[in-house]
Image 1 (cartoon, rainbow, N blue to C red):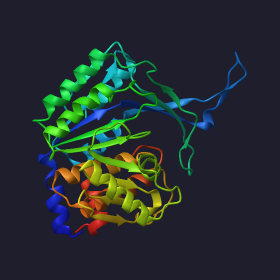
Image 2: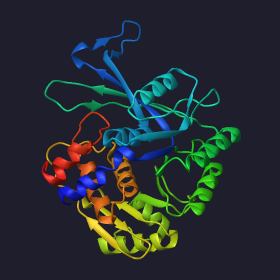
Image 3: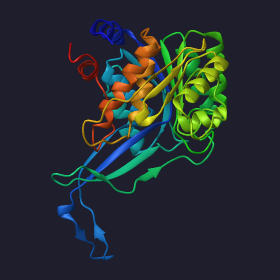
Length: 341
């Protein structure tokens, strides 16, 4: 990508409005100093002393963090948090982000705030080491009235945003934001606005999602298309192209160290390898950085290869950030893709 083309695409970001509909979580990090370990007098068990607590938006919030890092002008979270301490922390973390508007982010006593609590051991001269997580999720179906409210928000935002991102983070169907009821609203929006950028990603599968831009990994592509488990790049490109033709929207397939494959409905495909490793890595958040950068690039008018280049570079930047769920800024992308030029 030339410096001129890079600037033309990323220069549009400040003028973009993007809505993120999905499962917003609180990522809470408990920083543990092992040198301060004690033994409990009551139980005789080891005590891990937490010396610092930090929190940031996770799940769909990780995508939001990446959009903020890119300088997107306006970002609308569409989701919910509970009326609990974690919800307070999540809302506070969201509202402090540049360009974020909480007009369509619901506080409700009918849901817990989805929380990933991550104990993190920090030792001098060593990479951070994460212990077993303590997660808090919702195990019941999202109330229909809440789902109806979220679907209505999506409809309202259609005229206000340049792109939508959909992210399902939950393990049990219909327990999060993107219930079948909300996806029906998305299907209506996509049908009425065929040129609007709507990018969907899911922790498990995009089966049942309306035909929008699909971003997935190879396993998810196999599940949707019946592609062989031991697939060559040519097979992946062919399967992605067929799915794109069927949906009438682009498809992007992430392949870890093998890079990203993209396909358009007209049969055009492209493949770009991942960038070389530059040291120790942590893959947490890489997929969300790809989703954010693909969406921003497409909304700014990037072509297929340009969108993949930007997403690949973002993933490379993020995986080299240890002990956190990282992001990639425009300046970091410029340095990696254009040598700072």
